[in-house]
Length: 215
Image (tube, rainbow, N blue to C red):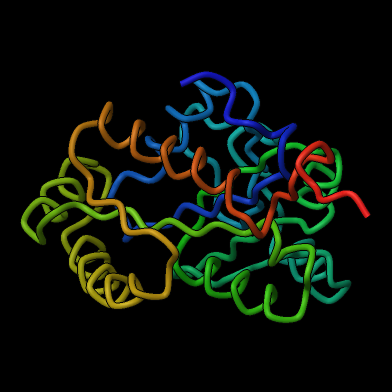
């Protein structure tokens, strides 16, 4: 498909969300592996690192006190409480990349996506860049299988996650795009097609000078 044109139109802020366990992290990782012209902004969290996770690579791991201080200082583009932890995206990290003409991918939960959509209503810079994509398995049964496949949750936590996922699914119509998950390869191709199309939206492009009428 080639270069999808970050130089031909302003940069995109691609927000990828999904119900818990639906596979947004895997899809986001696959996009970044293939597309070196797209940058992931690292999310901040108050939860403890899982085995193999590194500060500044997978997440910025903040104490609750540090996170709350940054909230009070207005440093987050979005933040949300997820179970007993807090997650957020630093505003400066996103805007710096967009202003440099760099496409940005955020893989965040439904609450975070809602916060960014709300901000876009009053922030023209975010509104110009924003593209929201909701990824979901094609059935509830498949969603349950993916959650069970983690093997890291207690039955109580798993039941809670399934209940939360049901509520998150209700938010799908608020997104620009609905991506019904199939294989990893098809999901990646679909997301790339969305990015390709969004770079060519007329709200982001102007006619070349050679095509404009002469006065």
